[in-house]
Amino acid sequence: MLTGKKIVLGITGSIAAYKAAYLCRALIKKGAEVQVVITPAGKEFITPVTLSALTQKPVVSEFFTANDGSWHSHVDLGLWADLMLIVPATASTIGKMANGIADNMLVTTYLSMKAPVFVAPAMDLDMYAHPSTQQNLEKLKSFGNQIIEPTVGPLASNLEGKGRMEEPDRIVEVLEAFFEKKGELISKKILITAGPTYEKIDPVRYISNYSSGKMGFALAEECASRGADVFLISGPVQLQTVHPHIQRINVESAEEMYRAALDYFPKMDLAILCAAVADYKPVHCAERKIKREAGENLTLELVPNPDIAAALGNNKTDRQRVVGFALETDDEIAHASEKLQKKKLDFIVLNSLREPGAGFQGDTNKITIINSKGMIKNFPLKSKKAVAADIMDTLRNEGYAY
Image 1 (tube, rainbow, N blue to C red):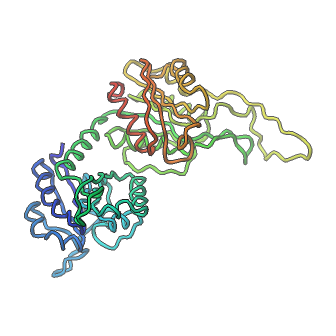
Image 2: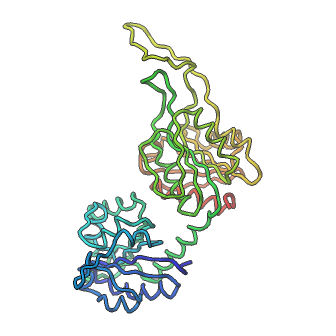
């Protein structure tokens, strides 16, 4: 899976830098092309001569070459690479990456990187466990970076604990698995709905809900990273897409989302309906702002919005699959299962407002996946990015999406 892959290997100032030589050799043996970018401190632990001999490329460390002033373009490296791997990653470099402190070539390259980024921390156990390090790692995860967790073992301090960099052979396995997964949805077209809808009452007021769109956007990025062409129909949210294979269609009301979904769905292989669509809308939208009248109640007459999940479930072909979402507050499994059957879905992803960390606005979710064959699979609380991966892995393992 690494044949022909272009990898930027970032090396920082850690005693574990010697393992980078083994990693270079292993990546090149697998057919990868490796370009090393090393920090000034990293050169204190392993020489550029060694790394250049292994990669057959000049090692990049400074912004300019000292003898002729030629410029090393971090932008070009960011466009060239299929993946960036920072091994070992010290607490200092992790902190700079998390906070955008671009004071060396490695961090500047990271900030320009268009490809996925993997980070393998290496440091003493107390440094790794420190709240600042853990907070910075969480920030990197929230940016979409992949963290290759350190292992427990003997450290340079002669202490033993978590902080030892993962072994090179295992890191290669992680990258191979990533590229294998990345290509699994090539040629697939996936429709995803995300965010809330706004149902107008008058020119300044609307009915909506607390959805942030984070779960749907995480799914869009996950599917695109696996090779799919993603068509993301989004309600009004502040989020931005990153992957170039995501085509975003912005809508406001449930009616607009319904029309867009029905328009795109015939060409799709899979639809994932993650949006929190308003079930009802006002019968009438006032042309002017409704004025408050002292002592008088305001009565709104509501009518049902079109049911996107039911429409797609009833219109899908044998080659198409539809995944729905259910947010429940009681009798969760029963209500989600009923929705699954009634709307002719293949899968339904259930989350409950009774579960701490699940539901609207947050960065985490706790889900249960139910399918039309009676499978019920529970997952622990995870980041929404990790939940998106769990959903797609479950679809693959159950043979639905491929």
